[in-house]
Image (cartoon, rainbow, N blue to C red):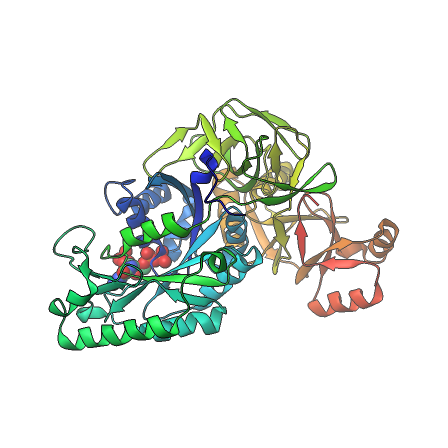
Length: 529
Ligand code: G4P
């Protein structure tokens, strides 16, 4: 679907995420994009806000200790008449589930690479996730102010490791101490790197044929050779290939020195797609929801507690998929629960504001006391069900053991709450009293343990459980019941009451699959289906 010809407010939305390997410069880039868009006054605020939050909330200590950011957020800014919603994805590997969920709400992504390192393991994983939904990717090669790999080597790296065609939109003039700026290949002008001249470090663009006067002979020669090669050998940028996720336009710069940031903002405004059609099921029939459909629809991709330490409220982040949302509107979940959205929040870099209206592509925060869960679909009719956000089979399972057995009810509430937020998964064995919590990574378990103690004041230990993984069971009810009877001690229910097989090893899963051919042992469960 092309959004370029569309006129509604929704067509002005650009909702995207930044993905990168830790340390490539995502935070610095976020900060400076917001700064360049005029959305924050001082660079440093994204981080400063994070630090303020950390000092207020105990469980954030983990973030501080590990120097990572685990809480995703959204920030809205305007540029060139468009409204950008920047979704922040957590950088740590253990949070891949959370990242996946966040990416379900994005229409495109910026991939940040460290120019000295190219594609790193985490980049690879994130691109795999983008590919599941064919999210278009725009590449920003960062840290050109440091010694970098040759641009052609970086492009090859992207092509080889990520199987993405690359269309360089710019070509850098050397790197590190000798970094002179970038040639804009489409406009055929050179943008000089001039950190001493202005805040954004870019001098006035110079026509390509005058660039010799600005650079030393060796840098000029390198640039000319590179530009000639790029023009001859690299595929030209094609909007359609980019939107289909086959080709990435590549930009160069330095987030720290604020070079190439405005160009990146402009590039996003020019090429990034707006809201797309989404597949849904309406009254058991598959249907496509278009962003300009009249009915307001959306889905919850994240639930966050702790946003205001004075309240126990949770905020559900809802990505709107269609319609014109108005404050005070009544929406229903696919489970038939209804709520009046009286104080929807929009998140700007400096403030949170009550949103009077919002459109497809926008993200609104809905404060609630636990009614909304990750994966919930919302609509006016309550009939719309978006393809679910999957839960992935946990790789770590722990048994929750209470110091004080009288606190069992409290613990149940705490663990359910955290599972609804999507922090960890929760399994209740059909025999035996202890809860089993599951996570894709160790850090999730640590975050949960800290929060159970800090927020709920419960003294609990998470012991190793005799299981290695879990599989959701799907198939004829009678077969599942029979399987359950034979494996009583290994059967649990997840938070939705669906049956789960807690397996001692992947070998056991394989063996069971052979023995019980009518049952599917699922690695991922799509909620809602
Ligand atoms: P992340 O969110 O992707 O993990 O990366 P972040 O922005 O935190 O950047 C990681 C490190 O790289 C930081 O240095 C940051 O200053 C540096 N950096 C980011 N962009 C550039 C760039 O364009 N050029 C150079 N030379 N460095 C860059 P740090 O020393 O780890 O942290 P800090 O003390 O500067 O905060």
